[in-house]
Image 1 (cartoon, rainbow, N blue to C red):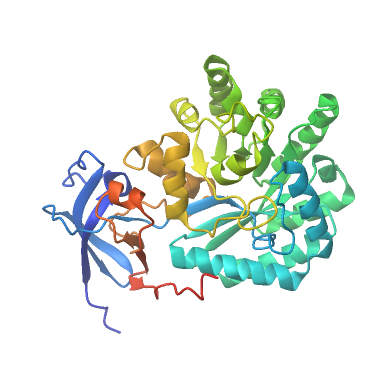
Image 2: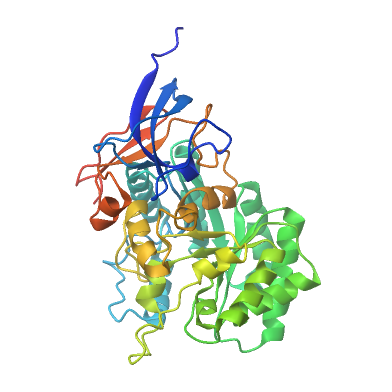
Length: 419
């Protein structure tokens, strides 16, 4: 069977997302962009050539990766709203929703979420799954089935989110084996109130040892709070000083770390780097829920200190977290909208490496994906091509886009498909 014709496309790409080993490609302009002509055949890049800049060349990136979402509860806000916008209200509504959750509901939510993510240009997601309660079985049944159905379009990695003591129970051990067999991760929550740090430390040690025995990674909801800054992180680092399980460890949120004075935060970040601990910062939910009791200090809405962590060598990704559920009423799995929020929230604009890596190369590594998101000969011909022609244009208003996957354009999303 003859090969398909070679196809070409001219656009502006971040130099960060182009093969660093291709020496005939120059550095990008002041905004990090480089005009190039891409060639591909049979869905695979065959050549990348630098060209002269033209005013109408569209800005493009490779498909982003979101390292922290919650597909099992997405789109449940209408039935289980949290109008007060508090952590307490979110927990109560989440508990009520979980008691009524069915496999069909999770299947519908996950299907809608993955369809939107695919149309918007995401190529992989890591979803936390409420576990350790009655909603665990229907949620895992539905999401494991969706994981297989969507493989190759939106790769789905799953994390079992359960109370730390659950992993020391017989039920916890059984779920852990199921999670490990599916390539998933073990998770838990470490945050206020820290009533008994010795007990929390023992439960955390058991989780670390279990993950090490099974060879599966860990992703914790850590310090999602406006109080007790980095108390959970210190607990984790102390346990890692006593013995590392030898598996990847991610600290999602790490919000209250941003409340510490810089020298203290840097010392903790240096310890994280030594232990290979990564962070997923989650600005949407954290800005919505946290800091509500500090009316006279509106700036104290905790967020992981992205730039400081990056400066200390910690791998940092950005995630959408909750989408239209009791924890956050907005969102729709649009990575470009998340990027547009994040550059304001963390002072990491996308023309800097630190601003783009949390959406592309870093989460690709966290999810251990086969492709790092960098275009080179032999890479998939996968792109998100916007109507913007500069970063300023992209940040000024939500850009329209076209998504190229394996050299084929996806149908443009309709209003119906995204609702």
